[in-house]
Length: 297
Image (cartoon, rainbow, N blue to C red; front, side):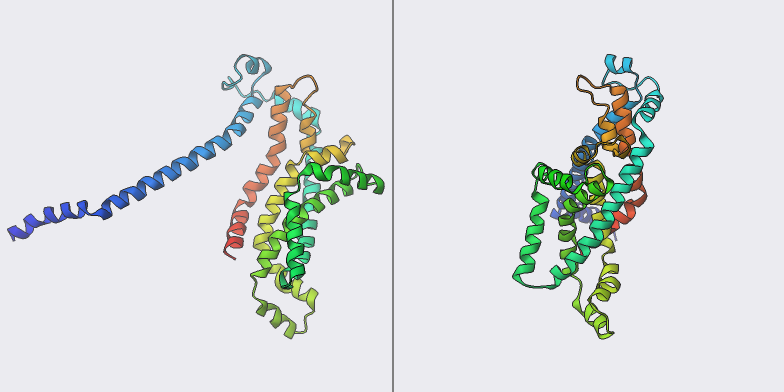
């Protein structure tokens, strides 16, 4: 009895000396380092946002005296002045209407274009997909002049239809690229079963394929929403009427040729980003689940 009792501490010491203990410590250390790096990167990415919000509550005197310091108090007068000067409600409605219209067009047109491309296993379909994918790598400045000339000849400059069509055409390659890979992974047996029930190609797409595209559609909508809402070049080029300006153009109006008024620019930038942050906070679960489901699919 005494011998077995004495052997217990020795056994415990031996187990602690085994290589498994050191590997467990290494895994914990590696996990700690990974989390530390991720938190540091998140802090770096959030730093400009925190600085923008902090500056928006400071008076002009505080900004001039201590541009990196915290505000002594929350001065809401900057937001009142920005709201009165930028036509905030109108610009937000313009951005929301344009963004939703572009998402609807891109989602439906992209899905309908990707369906036959995903099912036609030949060189032509693959070549078309690759050509569409090249559109993702085309810089904006390459398409500015052709779009402007075409829309000028069609009378679409300074119109909602013109800016919506421009954005839809630019984002359509992304939709085709997203949907083609996703549809190709859907079993063809589902379509064959629908055709046995006398469904034509359109009915197969609408009643069988379209409902299965919800996960990738949520992810695609997020990308399109971010790109359209934050785009500055094309609204500046195609819109001249102040009543049609988007939020980004309304914010840019506070950037003068000779200087910048930070007491107007920073609150305007916060107000311009606020609707997008609210939408993302509301739909974040659906967006994340859509991205995960699309990856697993």
